[in-house]
Image (tube, rainbow, N blue to C red):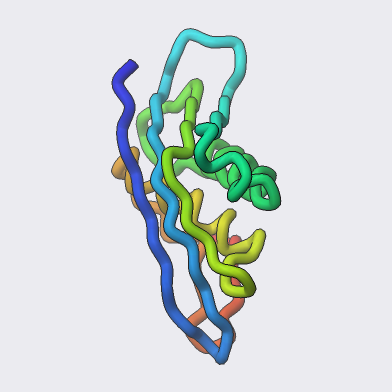
Length: 127
């Protein structure tokens, strides 16, 4: 398998809200498998990820169905290699957002959404 590595890191304060997540993913597309997407977690980060497992999986599903690329992605196999989180500043939504951005970076696909509203700090998922 030829994995593509994607990393996204956010560490900033917007509208008096802290945002932090640093995630590295290895991604393979278009494998011959039954599932449309598969998410794996390494043992070393399983405890860190546990509260955010569904945020990561939801980010993969969101990316899969909102991929603007001309190239069709039939399957998406994602392995979470590293993740760093911070109490209070790492929320379900920021982990979801960071997962989508890391996938975009790994596959060199520019998504203009989701985005963070720089005035309110709200993550907007609409185009």
